[in-house]
Image 1 (cartoon, rainbow, N blue to C red):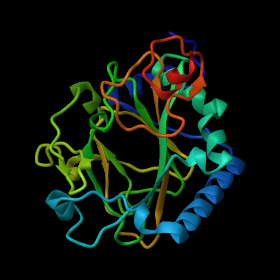
Image 2 (image 1 turned 135 degrees about the vertical axis):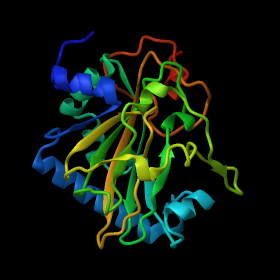
Image 3 (image 1 turned 120 degrees about the horizontal axis):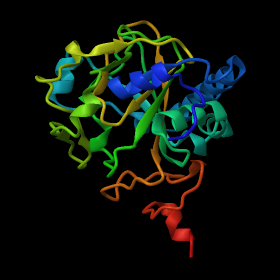
Image 4 (image 1 turned 30 degrees about the horizontal axis):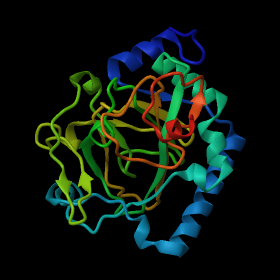
Length: 273
């Protein structure tokens, strides 16, 4: 066990019990303003280049039902650290890594990927309850998400919803669908775990939700008059390994803190000869 750096004993117990935790004051106001500006500039630039390529809404009858059969949408960009050094600084911030070291009980922390979602006003797509496990399963289940809110977020504008403690259930059966290109959209049984019965997790701009990739989570339709912005970082412990060679992305396996002395199937291992 590592020494306490950022979290109180009560916060660490909440994490163990619930599979998620909300944190404040990880970034300064100046840093948040830099992140917000770089985020907006990147989406504006990519919007001009290729609007269709930003679409990330899930498909299927269950999704249509959850969205009330409106023409829902969400725009997404992956690997933000490849577009601006602002995001490189954000994912290597000492405060953030102190949090992750506390939560993960290790200082050996590897990057998996980053992405950002914007839910447009009045039709920002919901997400059914799912486990990120189904997208990139790992042997020791150390994978977790860091959800940074760039706007005040509530159920009305498409905020996060969770089933507290569901990370203790382990991997659940996938009930998702596959599109015509072979891409899989993973979610659990919507009758057993409906979005309507999940617990909303509202947050202020600059607040972070850290959650296990086994935690059942989803998000609501954005019915407000403003966009909802988020930035997501996913990391794993260096001694954990993927069960399949999937979901590769630039900089995957980058060591954010500590050392990597473990057998590793990441892209970084190709350059150690």
